[in-house]
Length: 157
Image (cartoon, rainbow, N blue to C red; front, top):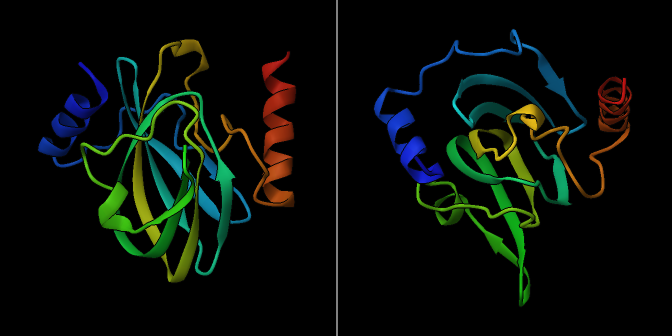
């Protein structure tokens, strides 16, 4: 099953929750909170709440993702071979629109905040974790810095 097939299957089940080996851990940054709500084989689903007026800098992840926009307001960015490009919810947050491995992307969140599901596909199940900490690029601020440092110290033990 590929990422689009899994996302379609997951949506057809009405976005179930509860199959979560992380026991409801909440990942907090300067711009968002998230929790892993479902896993199946090499797929992971994370529920994201982006804070009102937050700015998430361009960053990337070492896995493919599909995101499903649930509500709120924001303007997103991704860098392609031609440079930085803006997009709205309809341009990227739909099943069938995949952010590839290493694709730089970021967000400017509107006054209402925003909620989305991020669905990722992992080649290595041992590395599978929150996109908040498996993250390359400028951090979202001191809270995110601390979270990344905690993850780095526990993953090296």
